[in-house]
Image (cartoon, rainbow, N blue to C red):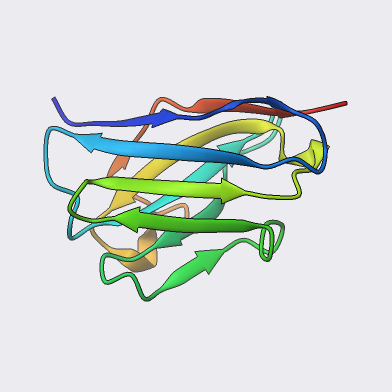
Length: 124
């Protein structure tokens, strides 16, 4: 069974950092673009960040640019999201995503695999 499994979520105070990790199981994602989306309560799921299989095309949403950093290890089938300077508005369920077509992963046309999600709560 092919899965994306996230870990690293939790509760942190504003201004803190948190690192999310995702591992692909059941197949190789070496030639997929991989990334992260999030969904806050009462809101639609939104794109956060992605990285293509070459490791050259970084994409970030405007709301996280300069604060979040995405990285991946193709051989290990993993993608991480380092989140710094966290704000209460970053509170959401964060989902790992993988798509074989890079131009799709940041859009509503994303077709591929989703993880189950990990909760991130930023609150004092």
